[in-house]
Length: 365
Ligand code: ADP
Ligand code: MG
Image (cartoon, rainbow, N blue to C red; front, side, top):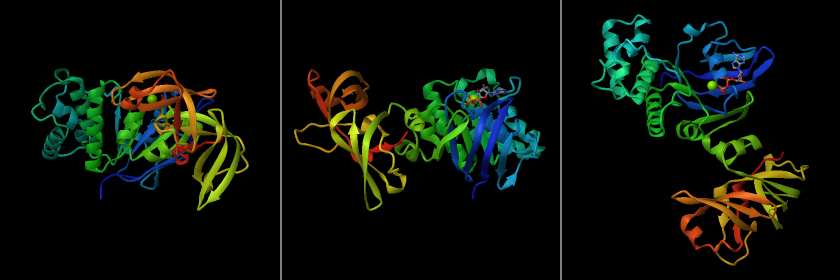
């Protein structure tokens, strides 16, 4: 059993003056889980962390840590570890002294401090550098020290606010891996804020998509990617295609709903698939999301379900695959193509594509 506490945010709203920065937010992090808050700038991510940490009061709602309402607990008593983008180390203190700082203010014995610092220096892979000053370290090493200082006293809950934003790409990947490794090893419950989709996907047990102070979706990376619940999440997750389906007719079989209708991408009827419980049979006009990698090139002359013709209008070679735009009927779609398939195409002619009913996400409007 790890040390991680369970965090529950229940119906929290936060006003700055008359501006609503958090709108009835609820989420739950189980003990030891790594949860990412993913949203663009200004969506309320930092505000949510501040409210949890106790730097800001919520206007409405409650926050529970291990089942205890923390409304009356001041921030320095919440025992929450924090790592922010401008993580300022103490410039006049060595690596070891920086890491020792949170232990000192908690009045641990000299011996205990010495042992814990030594262990942490080794955990963050800075063996041999304990006596250096921050100015004698690289950016990535400094970031590691800040991480060590944030977790050395085994905080049961760790809040990260885009701490890797200033690092270059390689270093950022390495630190993402380090943070995940350490928090998992120590069993710390972690809530991490990012606007970087890849970071959220690579690190998290669960992802919470926020926009305009509201939670758009909370789920595992797979759920978010494969079953976006609304148009915002589908579009936020990258270059997905949002396609109308009109005159929808619903049919049911074994708990699955098949929705057939017309679409501006082609003349033939198209069929989508969703769980029967998600179907809204009164909605005749809807939209669905179709990912670029779910649009498959048809290489034979056979007839296929959900098949349509398109003209490739643009393409970018990306090494493992080609990202292209294809004009299908009145819509331009994003598609990804296998490099060899792409090279074999006659781009002066229309090509045929298809998609499977189950590869779509029905979104309605
Ligand atoms: P994020 O971290 O997602 O970029 P923030 O939580 O910092 O977003 O801010 C959310 C919104 O609240 C923004 O529109 C921001 O301008 C506003 N805001 C943040 N802090 C304050 C404040 N102290 N007073 C007034 N408005 C604020
Ligand atoms: Mg922020």
